[in-house]
Image (cartoon, rainbow, N blue to C red; front, top):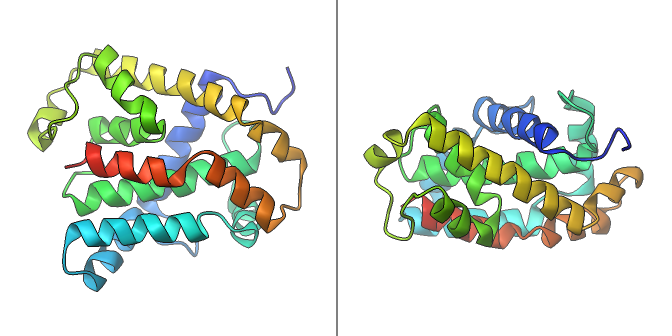
Length: 207
């Protein structure tokens, strides 16, 4: 196994790292709350603000300049390619921003777990189903808080497994070697892991 190979425990550490940075901010970037306030000011409804955010993330998602800049800021807790960490950070920040716009408390562990589930896109429904969480009807904010710790742990584990597979399948791991990153290359990578699908999933999960 190379130092850049992904394991479930590495993914979990990067998820935690990315979430913390999305909520508390990286130098020169907006936090999820700041981004949310910014979009809410510009739009008359929360739905419009969310759609606009997803469109912006699709277009700008991760530009090579951003990743290279971020690469300079990133001290990662584990050895994973910085482009994967960057993509996860950008997407987690988008999901957390959507959750914030819908009035969820980003400091709650359960909300954090739900943000991670959204990263799996279409697999989110399966993960919730396996964990016995009824998803589809809006999961009330109060109901989220009552989900027991064991269930949250099981969901986090399922997310880790799913993401290792997802990043592995797309061959994004190998992109770690292609530095400096070319705009099109990283753009393709982000596209390949479905920013749009992830955004739409987040919109459904956080009602």
